[in-house]
Length: 171
Image (cartoon, rainbow, N blue to C red; front, side):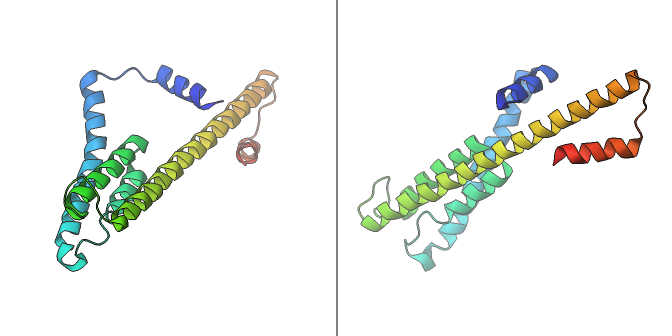
């Protein structure tokens, strides 16, 4: 089964949510990204006297990583972009949305490379998880068909043999 077959089966199994519940679900997910970037901004702001303008973006990678571990790809991209905008506005020289220092250009480039790497790893993890679920579902379906065929021929399958075949098919 492909990714789209899995998605289609999931959509057929679940009724389409009402607009308020769908809207609230997505607002929660995106607000998580916004809140995590805000917390990192506050921590970074408190450390500004010590850091004196250095590392304008590296703290925001913590928010990107935390959002990637708990939310989805689009929320992680939102955290990445917000971290860049806030880091540029508050901590890059001059304090605006522009760069005058070569160091800030390199910091922004590395920030986006690492942040997009995190997003890519998240996507790879989700794809691997969907493949695992798909193969487990196909193994379960094969086992169920085998069991139904044995029952229809009058050959009841002992539960130990059924469990062994499930474990064997999942590996």
